[in-house]
Amino acid sequence: MLEENPMIPPRKVPEKVTYAEGEEPAPLHDKPFKPSNPNKRGHKGYLEKFPEYLPNPPTELKRKIVVEGEEDPPGWRATYRGTTRPTPTVACNVRNLKAQFPSAFMK
Image (cartoon, rainbow, N blue to C red; front, side):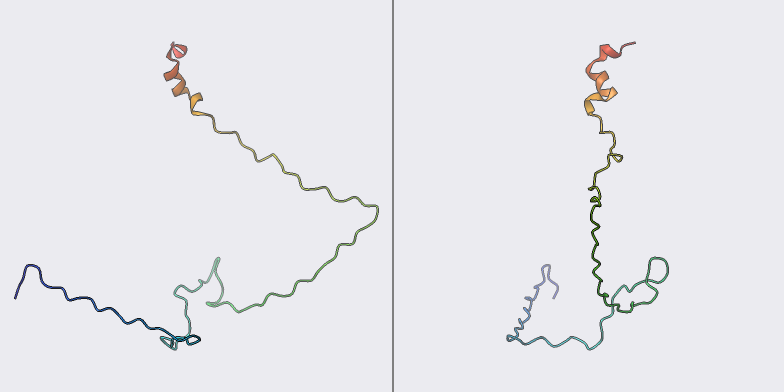
C-alpha cells in the first residue's frame, strides 16, 4: 500500500561490548600499519618511502676551561634596528581632518 507518511521502523541499538580488566579487544585485521599519505620523493621529501630508523647518538659533554685573569664575555643586549614607525592615528588622516576642520583646508 502507498501511504503519504510511511511507517519508519525503529532503529536497532547495537549491543555495547565490555571487556574484563586486563583484557584487550581482538584486532580487526592482521595487516601491518600503512600510512594513508606516505612521504614523497624529491625536493623536501625523503629518499625512501619509510626512512630508516636512526637512534639518537649520545651527546658528549664538553667542559669550559676558565682562564684566570680573563674577563667574562659581555651579556646579551637587544638591538633596536628592527623597530618600525608606529601606525598613525585615524584622527591624523587627511580626509578626517578635512571633514573635522573644513575651513582650514579651503582654497
